[in-house]
Amino acid sequence: MSQSPILCVENLKKHFVLKHSNALTGREPVKLHAVDDVSLSIHPGEALGLVGESGCGKSTLSRLLCRLVDATSGKLFVDGRDISAMSAAAFSKSPLRSDIQMVFQDPTESLNPRFSIFDLIADPLRQLKRPKNRAEVQARVEAAARSVNLPLELLSRFPHQLSGGQKARVGIARAMVVEPRLLVLDEPTSALDVSVQATVLQLLDKIRHEQGVALLFVSHDLNVVRLLCSRIVVMYLGQVVESGATDPLFHHPAHPYTRALLSAIPTLREGARRERIKLDGDPQSPINPSGTRCRLYGRCPAQQALCNRVEPELRTLPDGRQVRCHFADAPAPPETAPAIDPEITPAPLL
Image (cartoon, rainbow, N blue to C red; front, side, top):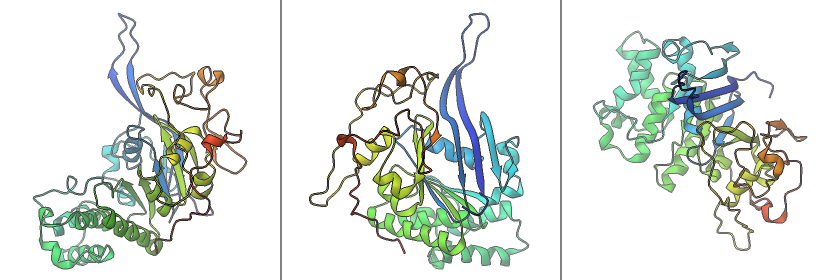
């Protein structure tokens, strides 16, 4: 991409210490590796999807990128400026805070029930932009409400008086009111009905095209990500296992885990091939994981002896995709062929 990235992270890690080391007993620290050595970038106007099963580290990574929690190590750049040394508390007071906003997963739990809808949208504006007067607050709150198709008569109501779809719009409006350059969306449609999900997705795509806001869309719903995002990052046990453009990744997945995820997508199309790939066995623990073994080992249908001796590194394939697998260059066997019918293409959102 020609434009410089809004956000760029290098070798980002977040380890939660469960038990500290003990010099007397020689006990090593016990750590949960929630995010391990993640590198990615997000460009202006781009929609990047972040997918993986529950517990893979998606939500922790999204909070790291929003600087809601401090990383264990790694570099984080906003517009080329290194903010790695800045604590989450310091970043909350920085002018850069308004550039990155987050829309949380549950629109009901993330809204203060004691605030009116007007005050919910106005609160980030008052905290980050310091408006001059009430008239400016009124104008910007109403503009944010209109941008998400939220009727102005709802501004005087409280969250319990709104439907799930309306509360989702409030969550997006309160993020957009400070004019961010990047929205991090942590499964914003998972608590909504399917019909409401489609409306919210169309709204997000409209915001991206009309206002040039970049989106990081965190989800476990691959069909939703495919419709909205031009690039996808796949995570497993805290690591990125594959990343690349959406169409090549869906039609020709390189990593065994990506193939398994795609094979689980249901289809109603008569005659469409769906050979389900089951990852048998128990997943490895994210607590003090081995540094000399692939994290998918024990479940991977393509594993070999090398996978148990050497942890694969994230490498770039000839088509530009990145994949963390020793044998990603090998053609997929018939039972792990692409799960998406090449004739099926997603309809445009707009």
